Length: 152
Image (cartoon, rainbow, N blue to C red; front, side, top):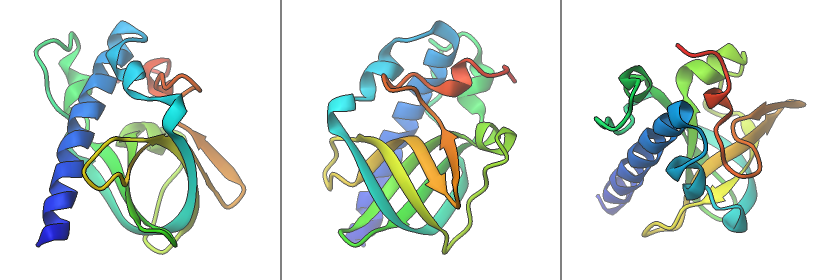
């Protein structure tokens, strides 16, 4: 029950963060990019335990193009030697456009900004490596790559 509560809190933080990333996609570098803190960047290796392709980001009237705010987002649960991380990837369509899919049991390496949360085990992914391939999600400052990608 305690883990479910922690996961729920992390998911709420993810939804809020990803909603701001959606706003960043329309307005350029701004609050969403500032939430990615390069000073808290870590790299972890682990095994994907769960793939959630339909996480709903926070919807805001401040987002000019609300289509981004309704897009399903990709969230991974990653088991490492030191704990279990919630990995916030980004819009599902962006990973699919890059032909980068995830499956339970896969080994991956995630580089990203560790969010301040109750358990401290939530990462906003910047890059994900698996099987010799790299999915680049954000630049070093945290600006989402999908904000420069084709708009849906």
